[in-house]
Amino acid sequence: MSSAPFMPLLLFGDAMASDDPARAIQAGIMLAAAQDVEALEKFAERLADDVRPVLEKATKRPWAFDPLDPTHLRSRDTYRPSDFLDEAAMRLVEGPYDLIIVVTDVPLLGRRLTAGSLSAAARIVILSTWRLRTSERGEPRRPLDGPAVHWNAAHLLLHLVWGLLVLKRRKRRARRWHFDPERVDASCLPEPPPGVTEAAAKLPEQVIETDSPLRHFWFHVTNASQNMGQVVRPLVRSRAPFLALTLPRLSTAAVVPSLVLIISAEIWDVGVNVEAVRLLAAAVVVLFASTVYVVFSNRLLFPRGERRRMTEHLAVVNTTVLATMFFVMLGLMVMLWLLILAIVVLVFPQDLIHTWPTLGNAPVGLRGEMRIALLVSVIGTVTGALAGGLESRSVLRELALFRDEV
Image (cartoon, rainbow, N blue to C red):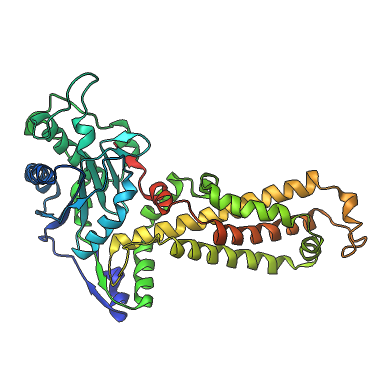
């Protein structure tokens, strides 16, 4: 990526450029093992050696695979791709690396049990040997060092790396990866799709090292603007405004007090008399404040812990998470507004309003009812953010970042 967009960074902090066309692409290999770590290490080492020539020929750049200290998993249970995000993101920054390849021996669950998953935004590829070793019913599990498992793993890894580099989702969906027992040598490895060489030229990324929040903010804004497509795609793919419907704690904490407030005469009095501009301004402030609170209280940003060093694509990931959470809160507020408006218009007895002493005989038309519904939805959004939050921070990460699997 050109260094021109990052020139303002030189005014704010130290940035490490990466424009050398001969620079090797640095890939960290992170092992996440629940059983035999040594066997998985040998498997990953051989895997890197076999895919390196194909990657170097396709990208016209040297590739350096760096084995990282293995992560020991506590159980052999099923894991989701987002379960590896914190550790992988930390390794990505510490390197720093251009991408992280996670090799694990536990079942990997996306929308289904899968052999691999990737996040193009986070530059993380995950490969599960558990799915590769699973045989047909009634047959023994395939050996990890068998040629079919190894070459299918090499085929899968290349398939995932091509998907990370070339963001042509519809074409990739038409060619889903599958295990083929006939893949037993290097001749089975897939050809790279068009555009890999150009995409690889953008892979070495900008890195900033600073303690200043202002510099971090500017770095995030700059990179988000330069990679807007990678921010928008997850929002569209995950249907971000509707995610509130999949987060019951958040929705319940917002809906319950809203139903209580709507029968309060004081809320009606304020809603009828408040200025529309002031109410809309309050709604905007609540949306941004709730987004920031939920993101930071649930520690959704990357990497965890110390954030002095930040890579270009982790900045894009953090922007994606913030944008996704903003649209979740926006969707929640709109949902509440529609719900309360429907109750006010269709259910609430109009004659009862005139018996409330604070309102007297003041007419309450449709505009007043809309303002009342908005006031209640604003308050409900605040209570949802403060009292509800997320069942698990992995939920949002999963939906926002990991929707690509094979």
